[in-house]
Amino acid sequence: MSTTPTTDSTHTPTIGVFDSGFGGLTVLRALVERMPRARYAFIGDTARLPYGSKSRRTIARYAVESARFLLKEQGAEFLVIACNTASALALDAIQDAVPVPVLGVIEPGAAAARAASQTNDVLVIATDATVHSHAYREACAHHGLQALEKACPLLVPLVEEGWTGQDATGHTVTEQVIRIYLDELNAAAAAAGMKADTLVLGCTHYPLLRPLFERAVPKGMRVIDSAESAAASAAAMLNGHAVGVDPLAAATHTEIRCFATDSVEKFERLGSRFLGRPVGDVELVDLGG
Image 1: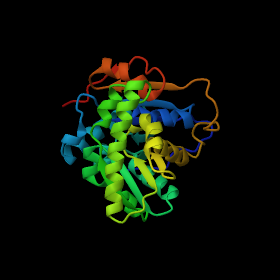
Image 2: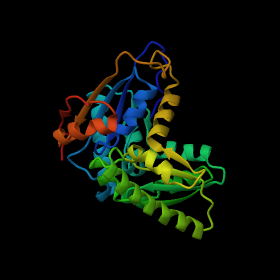
Image 3: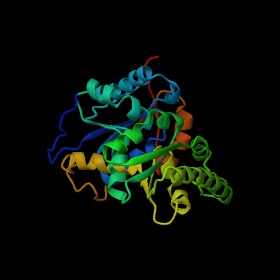
Image 4: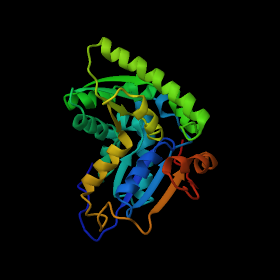
């Protein structure tokens, strides 16, 4: 069950962030930018990914175990589910299992699309699992939007290979892949009579490709980063009071602890790319089978 966040202006909250891997570090990065003086605990359930191939029941069980770890072991007072699959398939189960506020990434992305769109027609790109759940389509419909979703399975491995536009080769190949996906999606939207003016990046890996998307979309189309939208929603829910300072103020220190259920070395190697700073020593934890 969820409760209202604390509003004690002298209190520094502990914010727990959960993902099935480490892509959710882009959400943590956006949270730190908005609330730099909060304490953060991030867990990536790397031993049991990908979640997309699991049943809803199994995903809910895994996600609840991670949420309880953040609550009981790290003292989290607010949880951000920085995983689109878990947000789509397990958010209700997590909210029922823990007595603190829980925020997923899908509803904030849909709300941001509602604020950005003039035509009420939006496009969503995500992983296969998220697209097949139709969670974005349903969330957008709740906001009066028509959404057309497309799975883009090549983008996650390209990001994890570091082909994000930081060098000439990665820039060329990844941008070509993005343009192909967007051409297909825009053609499908036109065939459906849609006048889409907003693109939602529905995967936590995609913020690293945002400059490429912004170059590839038709002129005037807005690009919505669901990681940034989730961070904005979290800051709004906390109202800036729980951090004891203006949440946009520069921090002298940000406390971040990262945990993984497997592949600690890979997490440390790739995590800084997503977080935008060294992740430090990642701690290995066992959440069970």
